[in-house]
Length: 88
Image 1 (spheres, helix red, strand yellow):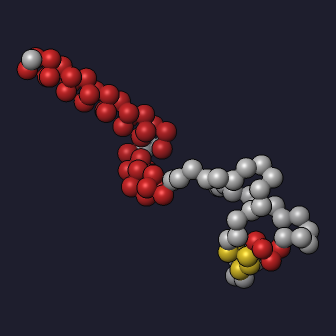
Image 2 (cartoon, helix red, strand yellow):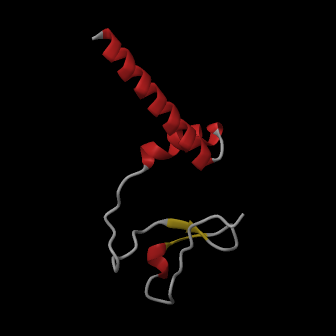
Image 3 (cartoon, one colour):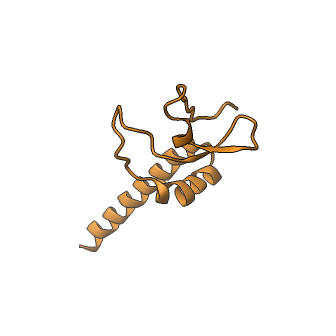
């Protein structure tokens, strides 16, 4: 029984190490993987938006980088395009 438990613990350790290695590769480095696990994962949740749903209201920074506006203020006038991503 002890032998089986040792094998199970060894396989589990190898799988965890492989998962950590894959996460480090995908994130870029162990430091980035730690940051992703520490900060991003607790805040991730599944949304309920569907195609055609109204956008939830949020406070956004305008293109000038100083002023702010709410999405609800811009709905109905002209089309509003929100781009999420990094351009670096």
